[in-house]
Image (cartoon, rainbow over all chains, first blue to last red; front, side):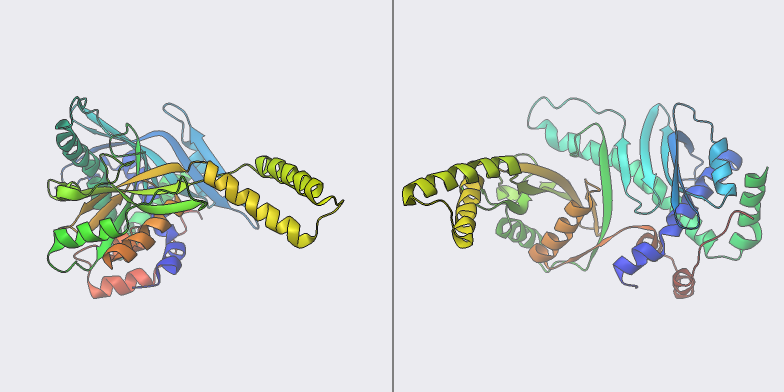
Length: 174
Length: 204
């Protein structure tokens, strides 16, 4: 395996491509949005998408924010050669909802809000509350891992250049 | 923000290798040997160590208190003191005046000024309590995985260093490359392809 610091910088683009691919699936191919059990899941863009656009000497940072944000400007950023650096996601399972931000560069999950759990009233409640939290945090983490695995398998196959990239390019150019 | 907060940030790690048996005892020893030390009455400006999740201000790992189901849960604590420059300047000025009067002189040598400054800083750091920062950790030993509840670069670096010192195990942060590299059914050919990837251009 490569040196960690070198790998972090050299392969940031994989995180950005993953987020772009996910956004494409959410908009165009929802049946491909599946979890680790291959079940179709409900994943949507929340209220923030961030793009970077590298021009000759500068990096332009574009933030699209707000409830139900119009992402047309994001498409324009992609057309100009920009890339998605972070997305605020909404993940729904039955009546439960998770909200979290994935940063393409680091893959850390930020501002993760899981469904509410019961109040802790006495010391004996802590272990149960912790295990419930772990179960709830695991859901979005496993989901992102499953989607990333799917992305990597496609990204390393000829299908990426022959099928996926042309579809994303067509979507951007519409 | 801790595990029980309404909003959390998580950095994921893969733990390289396993502890030798007995695992619980080795984890207990690693935590105990590197438990946070109090610096409130000390002149140190920073201290880093492990603390217990349930009672982070009175660390106690006795009775397997760090075990929760099949997970190990504890916290990294970083205590830091911060003395405002204006406060240092105020006491430095007062102390310089006092020294000049005592010696009946108009100026102090460079060396004397340095000694006074060091004394003032030492005094202030002893008086000011350290502000604690607590970052929770969930260690799934069976899965070789750690969730660290912070995405702050400095906190993550302190975690990696202290974890290695305490348990003699290496933490590998999961980001796009490492996350792909550790996919279980990735073949050697695919790993080679991964290493040779270059960015895709989506624009014409």
